[in-house]
Length: 465
Image (tube, rainbow, N blue to C red; front, side):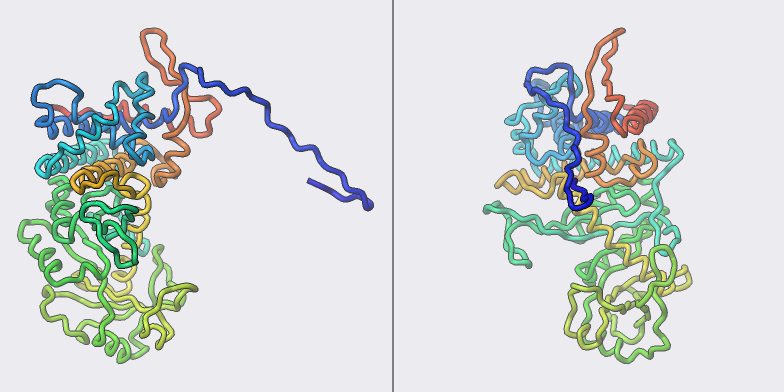
């Protein structure tokens, strides 16, 4: 830094870092020590055991490495930020903390040997572990967090469905051109808005059925389950399926985007200004420059489930917003959605609009998921990539279960922050008094939070059987 005094410049001395001499011959030091928390969490929730049972057919003679343990290690590696099977080396080369870890070829063989039937068993194993984790959350006193909108608690569970693009730079099986001009895959994913858990990935009807199968029985029956999607979910067949699910005793409701068609444009233009009401923000206050109205009865909804309502919001577009020709003509941006929530259940148009707008949180979940495995497809073989995606969903769930172990801002932190502060911490491995100790640096800023998480994990009840 330079300062000027009476025309003369002086240079202030900058403190130098201490000089170090780097060698690669250290011992006892552990990198990514916090990732052990994820491995233990997989064991405590029963995920490791459930994977072992699901993949037992791949180990017919009972020899070699346990396929379930390999699958768990892959999920832990992905949750820790790994991007390729080669990143298993972080766990494998630190056996003192993570135990024996399979070689890269062995992991590849597991993915290649997993067929569609075995993949279905993996999904069932994930559902078993989720039920245990939710019971542990209830016993811990926290339970499953509630989703919120307009400053109010949303009853039950909220499932957000949305598609994303996974770009491939080489031709892989079932990859195809995308609507954005790229090339790759276009999976549809379902996330639980309450916790950020990744429940399923498939087409709309299949992904909903798989997601519902992931919810423990105690929550799947007798609990309101709201399904939110963008306009791709407004197909009549999908909404009819949502309604048919109710016949199985599952209380499903929908809130889905809807395309701005010519009948919708006519209805919007015909709506008197006096029937537009101020929109709400997520904290329940009035949202400046945005208004909401209901178009039910003004747009033909023949073929949609009985009780379907259509609601529209208009607001001033922010700089850079994508506008349709209709929006440009009107000078306002319009968003339309359908819902079957009746007015008598607290379903005012203003509240339902802000509730639907909460669907945008799924974009954050997807972006985090792309750094947790499914942003890259490791193989040309589609079946291998399908198993990789399933393990990526398990990795996302391991991170989402931070609500069991962490408090404060870290309980809601995104993966990037968790990795930087907790998972990638270095520690020293020591032995003494017949114990193996993982000693986190006394100067690490988040040492207490990490140590507390390990203590909470040790106190969780273990699954039986």
